Image 1: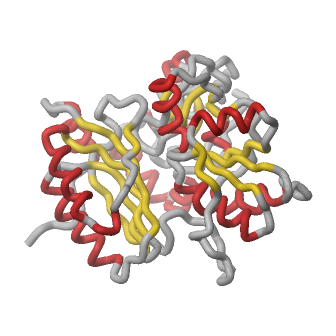
Image 2 (image 1 turned 180 degrees about the vertical axis):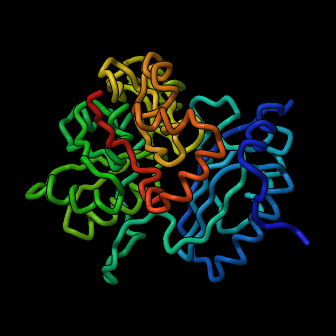
Length: 340
């Protein structure tokens, strides 16, 4: 019987990834379409992709699929042919990573969720298919130059390291939090031109439809998101209006789009834009850390976490069992501003 979940320790998986003799391609894609039995669909995907040693993270829901995966180059054609055989994937855009060392993921995770992007929307009259206009890089640049309202539909820790020049960057932790923020920011601008952008386009699909539902008349979104924009401006020789890094949700945690470093180390406040997770497993907070502080704190967010991280592994496990509640703080996103 096929095992439909990974059960190998992550340290073993990371070591195996480092030893791979072949190259990988990192891609992202999404598609809204009706899935009658998400659990069965999830299991089918796992069986197909697992045999090709595909790694990554995929969310499946009744409303569709959202995926970020890495595929061995020698199985790339197998994957592409599989996609072409699926009627619901007709015309699917595969966003290739801007920077790709093939180490973006070390295992395959496919989860069934209520939605492929958590939005918190419960309005039954809301039509998610009534999306905004899709603009290519050239049209998006021209709209920026003509003074359109540019809104970053990503979270604060993403826009902190990179965003479009002059963009509105809401201080949100989640997409669910951001939607009402954007409505408030754009209040009384329903007749003005609005430009939305995100990493690969999926959040803008929902956000553009939501703004139209709320009465905005000229809603536009960046086709393919930042990932596609970066490739398009390079191919067409267009001006790059994105400054800094594009945050990505894999082991890399970022792709450089321009040479500017627009953020600071959360510990010493020197210029830095490298995200990391605190090495103390009881914390694991996402934060920005420069190389100097990485060395000083052993990759931890504070002296307290450094002390725990440097304890023998067995002592760390005992501490984690004693402080089960502390695990609820794992994966907090980039709110670290300690004064050490």
